[in-house]
Amino acid sequence: MKIAEKSSLSNRLTKILTPIIHFLFPEINKNDVAYEQISLNIIANILGLGNAATPLGLNAMKSLQEKNTNKNILSNSMAMLILLNTASLQLIPTTVIALRTSLNSSNPTSIIFPVWVSTIFAAIAGVTAVKLFIKFGK
Image 1 (spheres, rainbow, N blue to C red):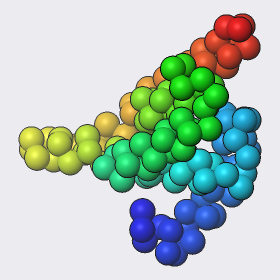
Image 2: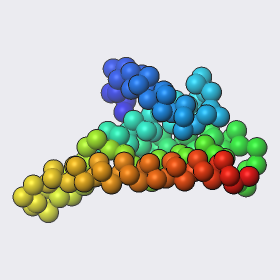
Image 3: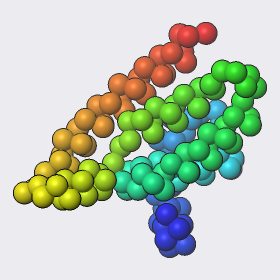
Image 4: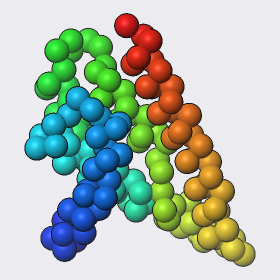
């Protein structure tokens, strides 16, 4: 992630993700620290960098909790961030590929397409559920 930040790759990816992030997190201002942290967390997950995504997600959650008016209840943005981290959309599921390689799989990358399909459907279902709970849960 440090390489992505220094090479401005993360900035370019954040610009690409801006409409999606704005849809998922409408309460967060683009200039907010949490916005950048959420963006980096999503990028790390998409790139399959789970170990890098975890601290980024924790930092983003901490920033969201600081802005949360009711400290005992998750904010809408916090719920969405948990969902996205649970769905874990990935272009290249490096951890699964590494595990399959270590177990002498004959084709360790054959998992890529099924991972794409399952995580995309999980994310769509989850985002839909969270958006419905936000809209009708009050």
